[in-house]
Length: 124
Image (cartoon, rainbow, N blue to C red; front, side, top):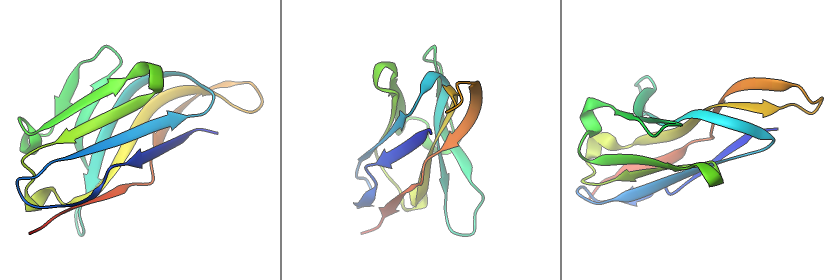
């Protein structure tokens, strides 16, 4: 069983900062890409930032220069440092990981795993 557990969401004033964390656990062999997506009410889920195993990153235009994604491969953890937050950044943020893991029966499987989401509210 593979799980992604997020933390770090909350209420912050415009211009403030938050740091999100997401840790993957289970019989994981490898994680290729890890990323953060967000979904605001009435909107589709959108990519915020992505980091692949080699360290290359990709950001949505709306967060470039304000958000930084990083990962600790030894801990199977990805972080999202969010600075200069704006009201339009408010959303449920979801962690995603493209990984390979061993099933209970011992087979190696690929999985596109999602966390449960963490709420970010930006308001004065």
